[in-house]
Amino acid sequence: MFEFTVAGHVIPLFLLVLTGFTVGVVGGFIGVGGGYMVTPALIVFGFPGYMASGTDACHIAGKAVISSIRHRQLGNIDWTIALAMVGGTMLGVELGVRLLVYTKNIGLSGVVLLAASVAVMLGLFIYTQIETQKSHRKLEADRKAGKEIGREVKVSKIPLYFQRIPIMPIIKARKARLVISMWVIVIVGVSTGILAGFLGVGGGFIRVPALVYVVGTTSHLAVGTDLVEIVVSGGYGALRQSMEGNVDFMAVFFMIIGAMIGAQFGSIATSFVRGPAIRYILSYSLILATVGAMMRLVYVLTGGAQEWLAFVAVVFTLGEMVFLCLFICSLVWFAVRHKHGKAVPEWVPPLVVTT
Image (tube, rainbow, N blue to C red; front, side, top):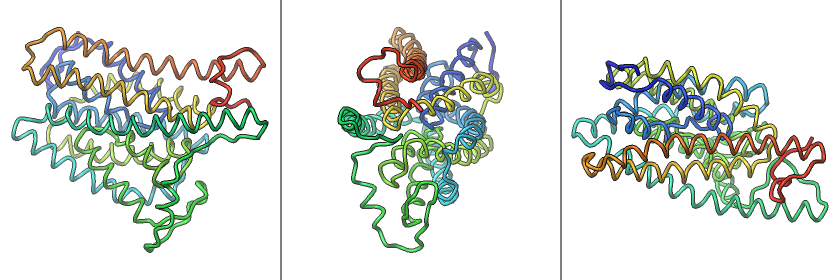
């Protein structure tokens, strides 16, 4: 046990290290900071809502640097898109932090954070799951027909609409192989930045779907490019949260220890799978985090009267992250087996890379 004097609670260290490791694996794989899982978890561990948000923002910034370096080596970053989003991201983070300070001052930060998390994550899960299942079926049909399939397949036509918007300036993203109005990218940055500043997250759980379904990048590029944005939003958010006194740096330190290892594995794992596999993990992480956040919301709304809810919420929070890590490890294992001609489940071949 360790007493975190700033947060004002005594918390087992292994919980923070394990949280950092598991979220590092998941974040490196799907390109998110993992704050939509960590911030609610810290609230249940005993951190006040504003302290959980600020502490997680610092943890996210450090982990994103590690993951970004690895994804740069894998060629998964479009710097044109990343740099175009920076200004909008920073503006959005500032607006989000100010909104968080307001809820903190009226004493509703915990309730508002959890309620907003549930609403946003549930909507994203539904859309991402539907689209990814359609893409998976198309991959399977093409494979059985003997057609050559690449690392990415999407059935959504929404990006085509946004790519036709003729508002100047128009930028050419060579790595992503697309041409689009810079204003579309800036607006994506502002909207996700607001969530990053308010929820204490990197904004990746909405920015990755936005890059895929609005801007039109591949899933792999969305992951790497988003992690660059998380470095910016997380770093700026960490600075602002520190200025407001919302950060326990000892808790950040212990989470970073676990994240340093987990982020490396998660980033490398993306080279074994196709785009829909990444989106599957993203959607599953969203629905699991939604259920966990709903449990924690009920616990907070009942004034902490139902102690069993707090216990179940902690177990579920750690369980969901361990489950996602095991799922990612399974995909890598199946990819290796399939590459060597060994038996794998029928749903695996369209989702993994064999070359």
